[in-house]
Length: 48
Image 1 (cartoon, helix red, strand yellow):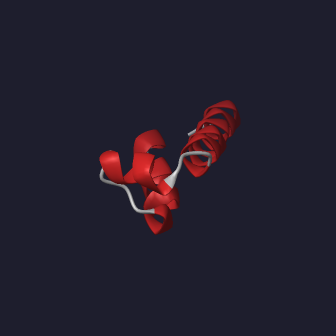
Image 2 (spheres, one colour):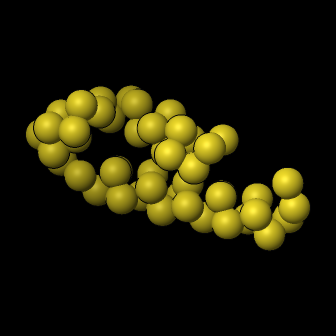
């Protein structure tokens, strides 16, 4: 994987973590995500 792709994936990961982190516990629950699962969900979403 080249540097540009890694940087792009890292940005997508951080955006996903930030967006999910702004959600309330209720909103996360509606999605089936626990607050402690946010980083793992973000990793999976970008293919880490």
